[in-house]
Length: 504
Image (cartoon, rainbow, N blue to C red; front, side):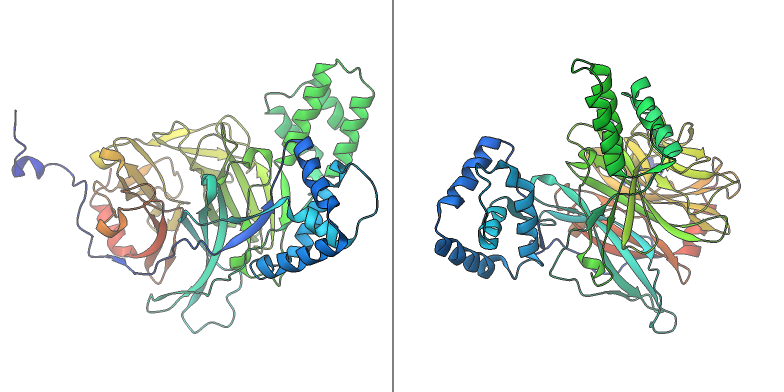
């Protein structure tokens, strides 16, 4: 058996280096809070079971029902906002399962609705994988400070993930301040987007179940259409065809499934940022929304908007999705299409490169690829740019958010997986004009989990979904072992100089 000598070790990159002098952990933590809850539907799939629940409520006297409403409000009313409205909404969702159409009092409707409602502690298990962008409102700040928005992956019962938000201020001296977090979480109001027929048809063509009947259905619609108009058209087609027409049923289901995965949610301006949540909404998201990578995108006309790529999980398949917002009040969610819109970890560049959208991805779950497209919704081609090269990334290499533009090139914060499924954060530099050219990459990690960061839901992990440059420093929020999140401040010039020493 050959011993590994210290001399031999000196020729290897360190798996677990001590922190670089230009990397400072800030000691600001965001930890999961089981007290933050939202209300959501409690679905009873068995119609007979649901009917029996309603029948039991119907048997109670009006006096009993009124007393029960008072008790329910005392027990649940101060835990969530607008609970009465939610119970009433749930009543209207299940009222078709009643055995009688007799008129009901408002109190009885509320009791029925409450039996089909549940509280959900959205971040009881974890609050991790943060992404950072600058807030659209920079007013009222001390000189030299900037307000930021942090998106985080919140995980609760059943490992169901959603995206939540926090805000804060970074001061001129690099002190990081977190705004107070609301005790309440509010579900948004879903609304039907106005679908563009040509874009919808192009997306439909990418789906496996698209057929001639599906195209025929879409052709009957106007240049733009709503979900209501689409549902009416599918019903019209189903009624006009034979019951055994499988192709027609498949076409209608394919069209409706695609439409449900492209939707809009809205908040009112009086809802605080920390009260807002992107919760699983469409069938493709029913098992979670994971790892939103936000980026502030500068368009050719000088306008700005925020995009986020995230992973939708339905329990079997993972599908990348795209989120778009201008104000963090209205969010448009849409599918990403094309053969390269696969797997996790897609990250959009903050502007077009050579007239095209550009994206990083890890389609093979091992290597990092570059993609270009004329549309942010469709991705057809990829080019390999980074393979695992060092022991700390031998298993796989990926990105930690969107590339950051610097005078020396596109700075890509990477993550690597090494022995014992140990995650580290690294860095690479891509050419500004041709990002497929890797100028440099670190041989040793930039950041590895220290002892206090190694314990959590998934041990030995540091991970980020994106940071920002501020006052010549990279502000990098990162997750600790898939449990909680914190911040590191990294000197930009020392990092670029270190990368210069590892030019390719």
